[in-house]
Length: 319
Image 1 (tube, helix red, strand yellow):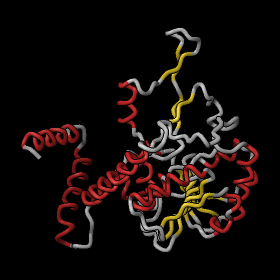
Image 2 (image 1 turned 90 degrees about the vertical axis):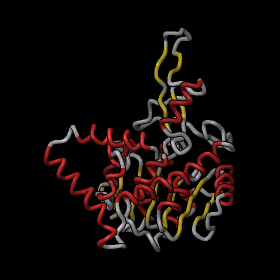
Image 3 (image 1 turned 60 degrees about the horizontal axis):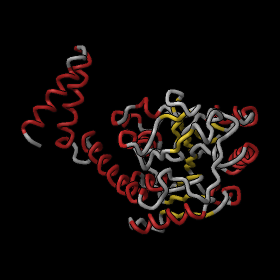
Image 4 (image 1 turned 180 degrees about the vertical axis):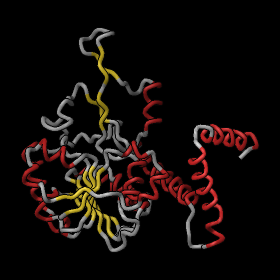
């Protein structure tokens, strides 16, 4: 880091500090002091700075995987063999093929999306009447989770120690959740169940390319409804929004299936409130006592994230 960079960093810190009152400044000063002498007091204690650097390193690893996937999947990350249909119920029922654009969050973060828009490879608007001023803003959706969301799940929502636990990703598609679980947790077993064979082949290629332990991470090409054994043996179930991949009746069938086979005490992670999902499916009454929303297990790590960005990630325990 050059002298100019250090000076610039100091200037940005002063800008931040200038907006704080005396009590806040003392709080920050105390925190900085605690980070600086932790190692001297206890070598086993990891400072927040060390955790931050570790997160950055793991994010770079996930970015390498994302860049590799960009070369072998279509730009919208939707396989020609997939059947993806906009839902007719729920909070995404306003999506149509005309007004919706899929941008995979694992492959392209916000900065990359901005670059794609500026370069003309991606548009934020669509024409409503073939006149240049008759335009509406496109709805951007993702069938995956961003690298930052995955880090939030494993560093804030879930417990730190997942040894001897099995993580199940329902509808693993390109494998983003699986790669996140592999690099961000110590889970003993990670399983992705995916119906589409082409997606499974992409995941298998990625596991081999990045030398991930095949004894720890597995891909199963199957309908989840046919694998109650995997569901029963899992401790953490991660479910991205399924609306675009199943019709309303099958969606309802899946939730009754999960209620029957997910064991008590398991964690369920969803990128949408279960209240919204079940209400849209008119299932709230049947599921009222099944799930309990719970607080993040590692609240001390929220310091590494802009928490508002992850307000749509929910953690539940199964009753």
